[in-house]
Image (cartoon, rainbow, N blue to C red; front, side, top):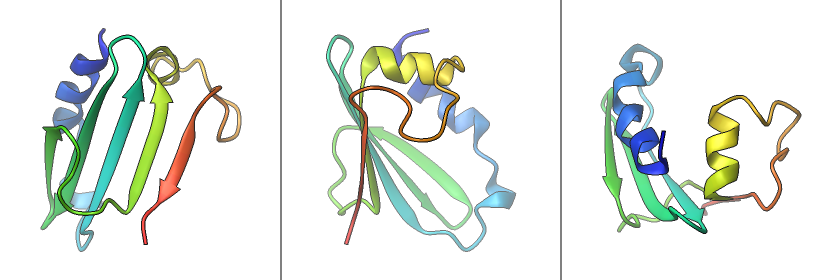
Length: 93
């Protein structure tokens, strides 16, 4: 699976019943080969995933190398966060 395919699959895994009342933007900055930026808008029990940076300041930005992202999704980074090398999380203001 490619990095892009993982983001395309996210919408199918979204559980609207668990997001009731949540309004937020999460941005993913994936670096290196296959690197890309995606952001997710969650509002009104819906999830919109878009390629590129968010025009709205994100509440959370996850920065991680492409291979680390794929490894994490495959279960390769199971220790406490941040367990993958070169990863960072930035909370918005």
